[in-house]
View 1 (cartoon, rainbow, N blue to C red):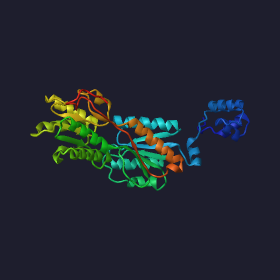
View 2 (cartoon, rainbow, N blue to C red):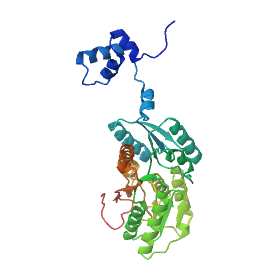
View 3 (tube, helix red, strand yellow):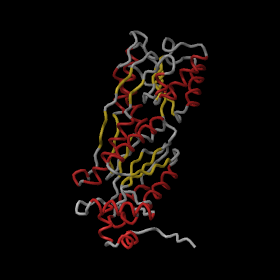
View 4 (cartoon, rainbow, N blue to C red):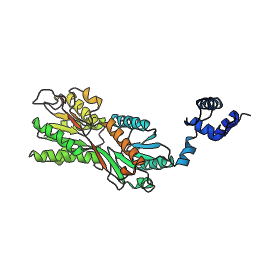
Length: 346
């Protein structure tokens, strides 16, 4: 019967008549081992089906060179692009990544923390679920000294690092732009206020109204899941209002585009009747007509920077302390809000 056990360096050493330590060093291309010996060892290893036991090495070194990543959902342009940035930096430094999604659910997020802990990840990158109300499930990692970096959707906590943009400032800039175009009754459509990104964008909206002498109205704030269907519902709600808003600021592009489509189907003109702005600068913002005013949120860069930060925390005590890293954003002005000025895509 065929033997099913793994080939070891001892088997290669026995076959070639050399010591196991010579085999080990040859496989690592140690300069003290002759090139011819390295060649013979590699050929024998290939012929005998040898596989490097990464798990055993990780136990000896107490490192797996694996990073865990938890995101709310994978079918999001923003998150998919952020993960591409994470993967790029992880590969650059020789790390593998394990990706999981919470599906916007705190309980699933907590289960994934345990799974990744048991997978012996060296560190964890997290963008929080929609309804996460506590960070208790991350204590398992923090108590073991496993570094944790939050990005985009973050939570302030002892020992945690956050990588974000200034969402308050971005919200302020969008609403100020709408006001500069003559809009005075501006609706805000945002997500769960447990999440920093939506609270801060709302606060920027309020601040811009106040600075421009406009009253804040609770009736013009809508909190939902920011889906395409939610955007359609918002558009239908606007159509039924006796006193309609003259502008809508939605906290993501998907919802903003859906609002535009619903209003246009009802015969309204964007931006002449109602101006619409979104957030994230996703590809759909350049396809919809009129093109959507939005905020360029550098998702690829935020993934890269979050990973760079985590790896620095893993490899240097200098970066052990928690910090907040803020990336630059950019207001992209397009036709969906331009009432007074000529087209300007900045």
